[in-house]
Length: 201
Image 1: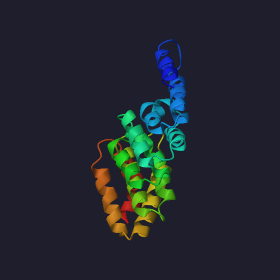
Image 2 (image 1 turned 90 degrees about the vertical axis):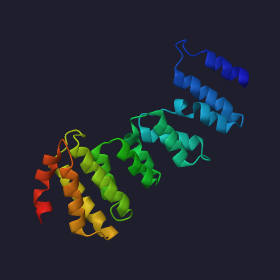
Image 3 (image 1 turned 180 degrees about the horizontal axis):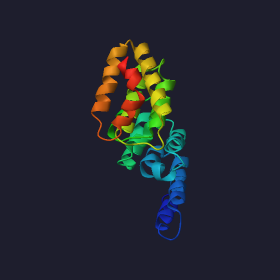
């Protein structure tokens, strides 16, 4: 086992794909019962997929004994500055507090946040409200591509539904949205224009 891993490691830099080398070493360790070492040394490098969510799922499948939060936090740490892009993986794992923590550190696609707000407005209203507000904050801070008024209105609708499910007064939610818009430095005027009628009611 050791000789095989050493040989593979020595192949680095010789036009050998690093992911393939890591995958080989990982499999050697896994098949020999050294799952903790395999995870620590090779899991992330051996498991990159086309999306962050797919990468997380690939690692979680190979290491079912590892807590989902541990895997996610290790993945997040491997890509500093990209924390928000792991939001979907955290959400799909039921790690709602971690999901919001990540988008508080760095942004993600506002539409991803708005879908989460809509989908979880009733079953996880606190999470849905935080996701919706994070999405509006992203837009107000100038983040997101081709954002339309429909996107903003959908987010507002999800926020109101989540507020109702959480027992939050509509006036209180509106006040929070106004405060968010007022505190933005970039696209707050756009959100304000779209929601002018709703927030005036």
